[in-house]
Image 1 (tube, rainbow, N blue to C red):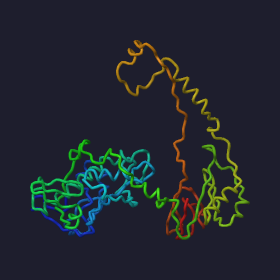
Image 2 (image 1 turned 90 degrees about the vertical axis):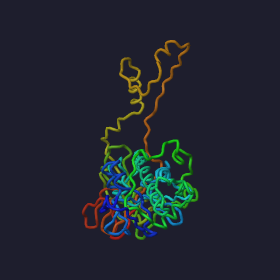
Image 3 (image 1 turned 45 degrees about the vertical axis):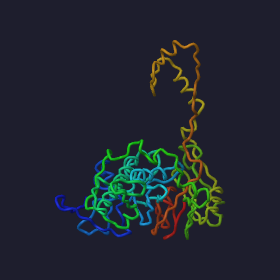
Image 4 (image 1 turned 180 degrees about the vertical axis):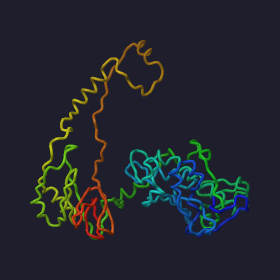
Length: 405
């Protein structure tokens, strides 16, 4: 509700400008239901409201255009699992948005607003935590957005809000059949002085879901098929430097020595940097960085305990433990009386199943771009000496230049 409103006073209505629109949902009611981080997530103000009547922590998840198009912000990055479709879809479900009129926008760098509650509020994607983190939170955002639209329509139509319902992108006055599109409400910009509260009880039951659980086209596929999608490694900026890193083939080993005589003859080389976990090369183009890296004569330590690791021996050890009688087992699921069924069966089939150790790693190259107007950039290359010789975390480059790692 409004920061300075008087609950006992008469309702007030404010007209927002077309560009600030209708709320982007949010409010203390959601924040209290989701914990302290979620309170912080609803930071921001609607600048066009009178200064003495500002909303308390509206969020920046939803924008409704006067053209009836809805822009939803995705707090997570697409990594191939479809989260840039499925996470904003949670808002669309509860606010009764027409999915054909929804556009998805990647969240800007703003951990306070878009941080992942499962990772302590930092703005990151991973760990199979996206849906778990945002499933309830963003459905509540959508539900409150819907209630705000209904309240605004009730003001415009001069009817009780109890007579209002929604269909995709439309608010309907049930007794008269009059309708207002979400875009029209955005244009009118009427906003009541208190934000309707929502609780989990306001969320749709699963059997009413229009989008959740349905096979919908992913929004990231068309640009990937046509080749118009821009990945981090595609970014090109004036004066950009390129960094590459070589790590040991055996985990736990360290750099023993580097012969860089041949590498220093590579045109475009900027710097060769020993790292605690390997060696990095910075150059003014990727091919020069790669050639210089390959030209290095690197000697690694040979003291890591990992060198004695044997997948075959580990598998044999596990099988020996599993085959021992009396070893406590872990019951994953129990249905019926398996022991009695086995004793009374005519024939028993026995099979052993094993799974190898498999590295949960990406099969594609990684990239990172740093941009800064000062003499350092923080990136994944580790510690790189700055031009004045002091260690700097990141990839070295000149002032106002860029580094791609």
